Image (cartoon, rainbow, N blue to C red; front, side, top):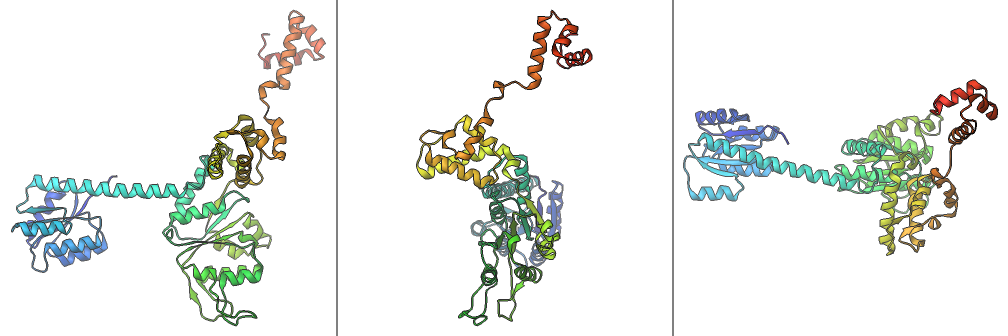
Length: 450
């Protein structure tokens, strides 16, 4: 990690402070000098320093107070306390309060250089460790999405880009492609990761239930509303709200959702008091929502509000390179879950699955492997463990080497006739029923010596 160390020098003796400043600048550091603590506090509030050299005794405050302030507001800042009045007690106090070092004036150039170098190394290691922890956390957040194919790497890259950008997100993809997994990955990498991920299926309820569940209602708002109900959106303050199958949402609910997104506030059914919101909305659909909007089946204004960023989740047929990886993952998962010693899949069975179109995508593959692991009596899943309709594809997995193409058959037959006629091209053409020019062209194409 390359960085330019930012250093603050605080010394009420202006000449001593400037001397230290110039010495550090010669080493390539970015240095600012202060003659009292107060201006330093204001400057550090604007931009953090990596390292602070502070005099112990100053008119307005002392170096221990500076140290305490830095420890409170600059967790990545190291402090070196310097003084012309050294004592064991002050050194012990400074070190107890978290000082990086305690030095006695006058400081020697070699000592200054070594202190700054060692402090820079400590800070660099700390920041690198933090970046590594963040990278591991981000990697772990994507481990539930299996895939190494180029199209999935594009999806992972997009997830990482938009995770901390608190904008609305639309996830599109066929049923079973893993749209909710993508939404959960975005949430787990965002600053809302410690809050709830709230999921709601817009196609699973009637219009009245959607209104009540999403927006809530006041007591007496309608017959049977005997108490105030807090809706899912209102109760999700600070959270990520995942609206699955948004394309199925009734038109009247689309109007309400549009208002919520535009105003960032909500009215309960029967309510007159607006309630401010702090949520992130991620919507998903298996429809092509733009075409639905153009056809008048979905509000165009809502589509554009939701479609700030779109992630398109590929079908399993578009990421065939991941099929064997997914098979291996699901076998391991269900073998452990069912307590069975299934270690893999046979070559014929894997070839059938590699040639299958998977209309149900990853969800269908998952169900196929779950069934196979549950039923098999072998260490490896066999063709007989696959569903009957998929076993019908077995004939497609016969080795290509068992058959010849028409081109290969023609080439071999021409060679046989040529051999029988002692390479007589005219006689060969007559036997084959080909014009002589056509035979010559075929001979050139197949690499025969003419």
